[in-house]
Image 1 (cartoon, rainbow, N blue to C red):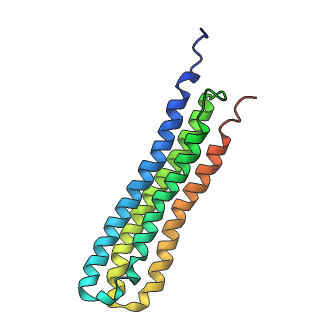
Image 2: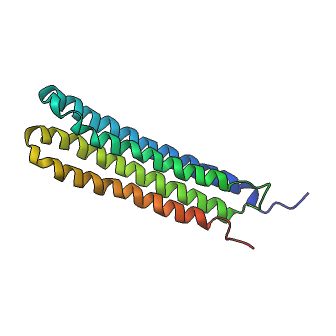
Image 3: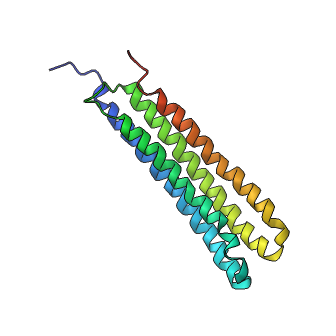
Amino acid sequence: MDAFSGDETAPFFGFIGAAAALVFSCMGAAYGTAKSGVGVASMGVMRPELVMKSIVPVVMAGVLGIYGLIIAVIISTGINPKAKSYYLFDGYAHLSSGLACGLAGLSAGMAIGIVGDAGVRANAQQPKLFVGMILILIFAEALALYGLIVGIILSSRAGQSRG
């Protein structure tokens, strides 16, 4: 039996990274969907003809969960200690990848939810605010996209620790 090197626990960190990416991104997506959905329902009572136009924040929030899914799949396919050595460096790279994507998705979902709720209600009263609301939502979504990009870069670092 080989001596304990500490790398036996490395897959744990990798799998936690995959779980964190998916869980935190989906939490952001759920919050954004719920919060902006409440705004759409409230606005729909006064102006039902604007409901379909006001679904944009709900769709943008739903995309956040897909970002987490992408990183979770990338990470989980990179964890195969039987095929190739998987060191602590790899586990930490995957953990940081998942946390970067997941927490960025969570924060973006909170921003989308708050802006979406207030934005669709304001849009019902003043239609000129629609473009401004969309721009703010795009910038909020970009936060999650930054997390996805950094997550992909960090995940690609796994496997580079030792020859």
